Image 1 (cartoon, rainbow, N blue to C red):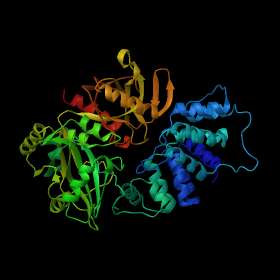
Image 2 (cartoon, rainbow, N blue to C red):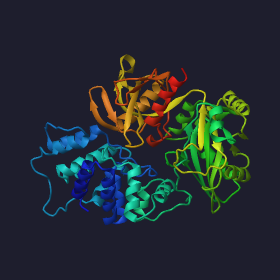
Image 3 (cartoon, rainbow, N blue to C red):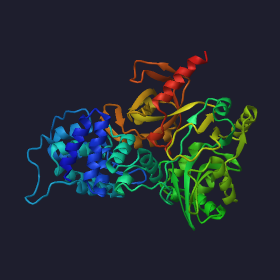
Image 4 (tube, one colour):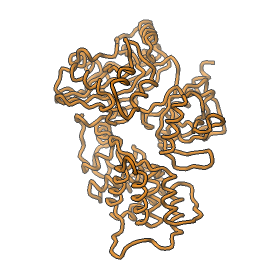
Length: 540
């Protein structure tokens, strides 16, 4: 398919207001293209370029795009509300498209190969290499095509293609049950992979292909958690990074909750797994924390080690890591996804030995025993506890109320969608952050507050560099970015506010930590924010 035809489809999808009609239209696109081409088309249309399990990134900012296109067209007076419209309007000033007599029109596959080449440009001179490829790419397209291309590159296509809609479209295209497609997307890591496989579903865990982690909701107290779940398992909630451990013989790989391969950054954990697992094949879940002499170290130290480009013995001694396991998804060739939590825990206890350890756990229906267990967790320096329903299956990507987290300080996981430069000493950083919650119905991120509190100078610097690489618009001191950075935010209360579209604002918001291990899809929803707002007044 020609890229100009994909751009026309994107225009049509953007104009459709009916969800059902949009599903049918996307399903038709999937059906008429070969699997590999349909896979690439969907990644471009959703602005992903690469699926979640693929660590490659384009690392092309709004400013870079602007510079490259400016060199192609010279002076222009662009108009538009997003990057694509701005770039499209700039290219309309181009007097003549630079094409050779024998040049073929740009196809989806060719465009995708060039985007892959941009992602592969690394090391010295990579910025120049990216610029050359971008220049070549935009010289091949008409203004109408540039609209889609530019928005896809910065990850802001705004076509309303949420993951839920893609799952519906895939089910429609291949005449499959929606629930099977949804489960396969979680097991395979994303719905795009189903399209690449031509509609073939995989409902069993596959070693070395990370599975979407099962998620938890919040409970306000131990008492309410036990009232809801009845007799349940309680586990320490560790303040670390969740990992999925895949083992086949002596080969071990560890994946973050973002489905990224983090094996190289934690070789000491890899060695512990090799020594302590009594199985040839396994997929396990656990939490990696920084720990010395049995006591947890601050989360910031853990992230400092994980963010390092190179590891040496001194940093490993300075920030020692420990893996605590809490779940088992596959052992040898048997899937445990459908097994009850209590059965998975028992099997996990069978297959591990020192130096591997289990997250401390009890089974109880006593509120008093549960409260004492939580106090012991807090005394040992952990965040709180998890409550898990005893007969619950493992639901990849599920955010039901089978698992509940209970913490002493109530926080929200929110996403930075824009930032402003600070004042005085902070003027060299983007340090004032607009915080947003996810709308589960539309996928939109809705602002619920702003803060400049909580981060260290080192974290301000890291966040500033990250935001620059994610920019989709810069106006004066303000930068608008793709919704990717998740932060854990504490606050005093939630109040009504006409300032934001949500109608709500966090009072005295402060960032507790940057959750670089979480994806924006795991952020708290606007429904959760509204629920907390309403609960404030029930207590009065």
